[in-house]
Image (cartoon, rainbow, N blue to C red; front, side):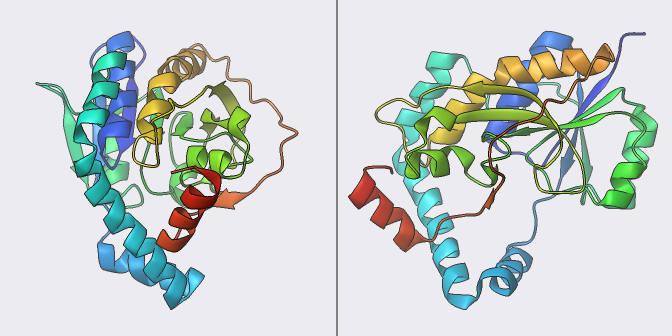
Length: 254
């Protein structure tokens, strides 16, 4: 029997781009699809962390992102077509729904599927207790260069900070921290001149497909070898809408 990969995601075009790249390389793969975090719970969590004003700015940015992606539908479609991306589930795809990666239903699904590798792409953080119970290696694709751009929107923050050489993606082992596990593979590249906040993640997913495949091959062959980094470590979050527009106006990074 060939080794078995299970992809775990909350869905969305960028995770499906990675999942479909793995499927093209390894054949049929089961996907565990968790429900998205309820919007009210997410807002409450952000208010506790950032305060009302910054949480409101982040929420406004999220709303603007949804609107802007609709306006940029053709540009996004061009990136998808030019790179041969598959940003959604394909016909016949096996999908198992769970409420959360930290719910008993997820543990039951993993026990039933008996994977040799769990590949996380865009899902909640797995709690330490759940992670300890996993029967196989657990790796994650992160749209940013770790450890300097852990968290959210790593490509955008690299560009906004004048650090374009660290625009890229990382595959890393999963531990109890936010993108703090050992780095397995990384890729760096350049966005197109007309890319922006709404398209960076598509560009990063396109350039990261090969490292995701290579990391999966390493895991299945039992040769995972995390590498140390001399980069500083910092966790990033969603920008507020006023910081986004200020950065666009003053630095030309949109």
